[in-house]
Length: 197
Image 1 (tube, one colour):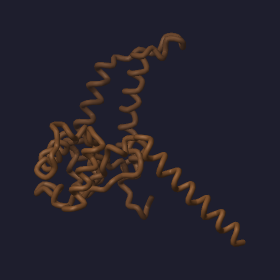
Image 2 (cartoon, helix red, strand yellow):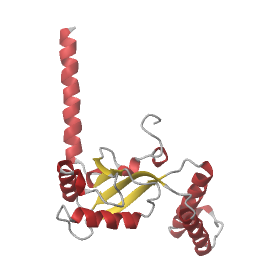
Image 3 (cartoon, one colour):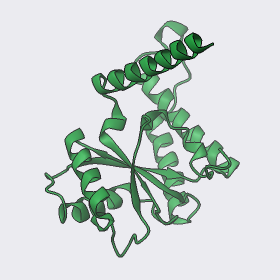
């Protein structure tokens, strides 16, 4: 029994060491991202949020221009109808790209769409969702930095003083490091609390 326990503990430790070493040797987008929480549901403009964060963080951390590569807000997709319409628009974008790349050449003549007209229709729909308040934030966003070292500096400064990120417009925001790749997030679960997931 004791020998088996010791071997099991050694195996567990070996697996943990391998995981840590593998993670340090392989870069993914989580090495460049932080999770911003506490956003109001009305915060849906990613460029505006990016600019606000760039200005605020520059007051506390020496940042290059465009140190923040982008911001990706998690939208509330709990309304099934809205979610279906968003998926339709994404499918249109995919079909357009496939047609541009010639994906249908070997399958005969594909149904040709007026993509510029469809793009205008889809854009008008999306703008209406934002203008009418149908598409809202769930209070979370990924902040993606241009350099991993900048992300680390911001996280270090925030861990020393949470005021680094505090703004009058966003009084409840907080930063968290992420140990998962933002591209693998199931965004539809972002509106759920941890108890529901």
